[in-house]
Length: 139
Image (cartoon, rainbow, N blue to C red; front, top):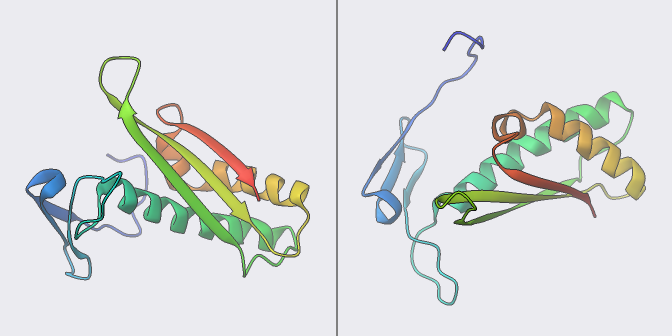
């Protein structure tokens, strides 16, 4: 690996794929997985929800740092990440994402500017760049 200087490392082990069980190395994450449901709710979560949660949390931290540097109070900001999963044009499956950013009290143009900068800094955004179609919107 060698391209980063790791400050944190973790792992999650899944037994059973999309309908399995996920447990983190420290035991704090311990969830039942399920396939996405479009018309009913079943116990557990799915990988797309976990990915959206992780990306939104990371993006929010990047946004807060960028806003702080710009003199904008983003302490009440919200980041919502929507993940689409489905067949792609190459005959396999792929992901697409929409990121919605709100900073109460900030004008929409400033929110968009800060959100775009956060998208450049966030490690999840960097990891998906060129592989996942992403739309960032100020709301």
